[in-house]
Length: 274
Image (cartoon, rainbow, N blue to C red; front, top):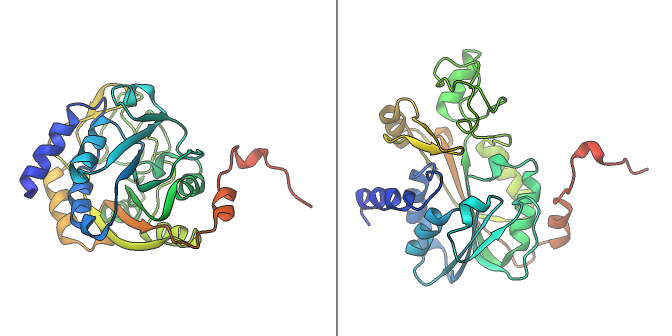
């Protein structure tokens, strides 16, 4: 596909979604890295929906795609779907590729997500993570001005402390609950602590001209899409808005270590061990 055809197809995929596919540029960047992957026949799309599953089936035409999502509304129209918590799950089968797109920033326990994903991968299987970049170019400027970050939100009702962020009127469903947002160095180090091999990385933009359909059936239009899209093409990838990591589970993967990351309760309920 040409870039124009890729974008057109992504907006076609949007039509079968309850919410829009965020960060469509990540799929454009991921397609360029697909030649690095071998023997992908069984895919798990974590946090996905029928639209992202459609894109994955087109990118990997010989594969089957299973969606995992905690929302029944997101998965009810897909024949292969699992309703589960992304940060703590066990599956009876292993997958060749797990696509964890725009999900790690939403979970309370990122270690649980990584551990569960790696346990659900076959040896030498692939884990693809996409997530906002905490240290992107505009967040660095915002912090210098003493403003709130543009992709990490304390309130779920209001975008506060930043004059560039849109006013929501106090409606839930506009603001994504980004509670575990990483910078490049942090995500790379966490992945290395779980023993994965990082095969490739890329940066991408969240900018788009069209309004974005959010949870709660509300629309949100991101500010200044043209200049953001241009800057994400010109700046080094560590300054771009989104991060894409293509990883591989090694054959000598430590399953016990991965299971230890799957905390089933909050740390406030843990008892100290003497």
